[in-house]
Length: 108
Image (cartoon, rainbow, N blue to C red; front, side):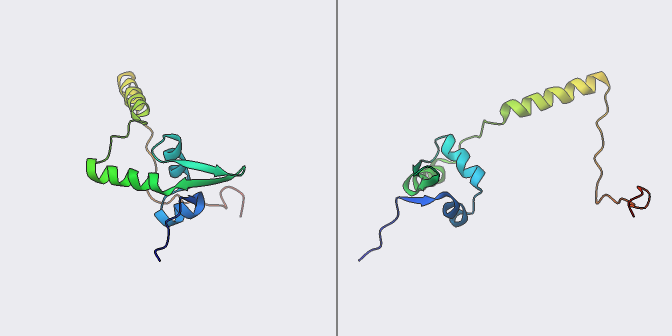
């Protein structure tokens, strides 16, 4: 007798099984890339078949461009261009570990 595949898997178990973060999976559900349903008030179950279809579609058709961040990237580029025109120099971020002398701060 063949074991039946589950219809849904709890969010945490699904994330562990697939190696995905819960925020990513919740975003996929919100974007309607995969389906989910609730059992009771809190238990979020991920529909296994919808995930399987999602993966198959990407394998066959390729990944669709992710456009959610396009507006943020465009705004960041516009801000950088404006800063460059205004002569504002970008603040250099420190490279490597930051060393703090606690004695100089009066904490040692």
